[in-house]
Image 1 (cartoon, rainbow, N blue to C red):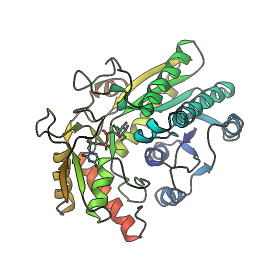
Image 2 (image 1 turned 45 degrees about the vertical axis):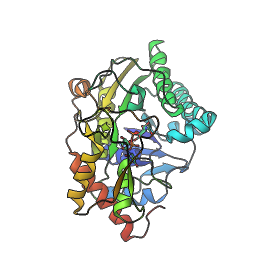
Image 3 (image 1 turned 180 degrees about the horizontal axis):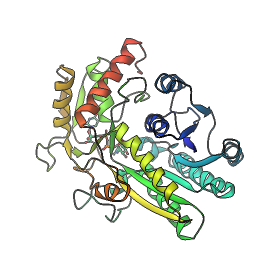
Image 4 (image 1 turned 90 degrees about the horizontal axis):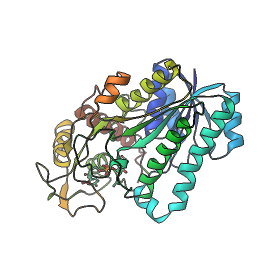
Length: 343
Ligand code: UD1
């Protein structure tokens, strides 16, 4: 089956392309390369043995999407394409609402027109804010979002829930990602942050590689075992495979209309200091870090109850945080060797 992968040159998208191919699906990438690079396709070629089919297009254009879906005989879609910088989303709300929700509306409408039913949507654990109970289940009430980015994920979920509830012929799953880390073990693809990374692991690997002078740990006075925040770090290949299992479930599901939401995490909360220590152990290098102030908007602790996705889709994380850090470090070193470290 041919699967449309919007944002397929991005971090999660590119790893999912590999997992799709390994499971016997044919991924077709649509990516406007606004926050990804063409060389990702070279990395994919090294892993897959061929360059995947791709369209350098923005998926906000219904005519473009209609043509690709028909020309490629698409049987399902995974929608990754979105802006994801939390801080920028607060400064440019219209840009985020237009791009993240406009592209979802166009995709759902063109899928309905073309009779394509299976859709996986990239949501985020950010919809939970600071959960009242941990580990957090999918039944937790969602608080008003702390960011425009987070709100686009909440509204995206609602668009799919309401479209399915109206009996439209769409079968959709929203996956609430916890914190993806790592890279493909081949080190041919990985995370390519533009500029200064916002996320913890690319900041750590760039610091260890000498691209950044030091890492600041954002606060050690939280009500957690060592005072630093707890997160659920999931290996990017585990996350990629969760998409494949979700897609298989939808394609085997005979109902004409379906919607559900699943957490995709390991179920383990890990502190920033614990992650740093594991990285030092894996890399054999001391990391230059200091404790700084809290980052506004950070929740003290967020980790998943991942039983629903295991019970219903049979997926669970099989790789460790240690493997994720080892793969992230190998990827960073590979970039260094080729002198391609993004600065
Ligand atoms: C962030 C986003 C979330 C997004 C996710 C994608 C915010 C508030 N949330 O989640 O919406 O879906 O990335 O992966 O931006 N940390 C440091 N020093 C650093 C960077 C991070 O101590 O230089 C700490 C943070 O305080 C946090 C942990 O590391 O406790 C993880 O941070 P990060 O990788 O940015 O992810 P989240 O904030 O969980």
